[in-house]
Image (cartoon, rainbow, N blue to C red; front, side, top):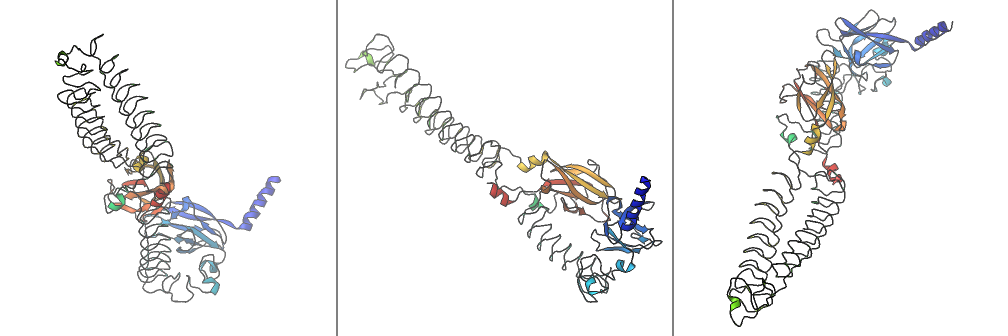
Length: 557
């Protein structure tokens, strides 16, 4: 009894709600059912999104099919029990179906009384459709009485309702291709000259909030050279960096050109002043700790010393200035090969000299060549280690402060033809890795290209046979349809997911050829793209990330 009561209650509820089924012919020998309610607009689902015709077997019910989900574009004629509607009489392909509206009164279906659409004609008890209230409507009519039309409710040259001459869709001015556009627009809510949603004039692609001129990067080799060009505007990948820092900085608060924490520009390690190469060195130090500027070798040396525990001008251990090379011999004699210590009136031996005719430290007016003490060879100034070197140089023909090789300017580090602070040939100042890089670049490859190689987008397709397929497409590559298991006849496509990237930054393009040269349809993103019922075969697809806007780059820098 309890079961019977439930069944009776269910039947009563169905009768009250007046729920019934619409049968849609999805193929010449197949059909699918759609559950509908009386006097309510019922949108189609995936299984009945297209078909060749429709019928209803409920007595006293009249239905009308629409090609759009909002119930505005009528598809075929009203149908009822025993009277079927045919949508594609001479076509081999099913027609897209957006929604159905059913009523128990034919007048509602024929729009003789109030209906659920957005026009105002019903309130005026007009039998004509559209935003206008008069008969014999011009552009933006929703009803008959148009001149030289190929379809109802159009002026000459129109292809759909509510258009002026030359329009292709609803509510457009002459020359428009889609809804609510000004002349020259190709999609919704665009200013004149725009190609997609929410773009300012001149924008070409599918993302919101882009400034004019910015677009996604597609390498299809046609007329999109401007779209392909890499942008060379430097922008940072980490917080609190000035423009020009561009690779893998892991700490904030660095000035441009720094490689580590708390460094001034040009430092290579912690706690160094500009130009230092190691810890706790003053500018100009070359080797180890606790050296004064100009020291060359080890700890506890005064400027100009070359070995441990030697006072200035000494060349060996345990000797004070003005001593010679033999123990317990006073300054009047030495054991070198020169002749100066055998003569009378010599004011002391040549202390610590490695060559003839050099005067000892502290002696004045002695020596033929007039060299100063502390030289290791001829023609050297004090502190020099080799010929023709100015103080503090380590090699010939170097200016003071040079470290390595000939013909380098002060501060050069490695090889010829480098400007200051370069590490390799033919690099601009601040370059640190490879040729043909701008300042501060660390790799040849564009950052967005590196990101795209690691990521992919999920794209859903609908074929001409109403078959749905989903494919994962690597970003930045032209991929053949056989690799992503995509049928060759596609009438709709859309981006439905993305791996490791914001789905709003992904846009895709279909191509008629495998090389990705001939575009098929428009670029598309999260919004589905339709290429028409009679689509050409699709041979390849490419998905890419859209460029960041200049505004966001400036805010980040």
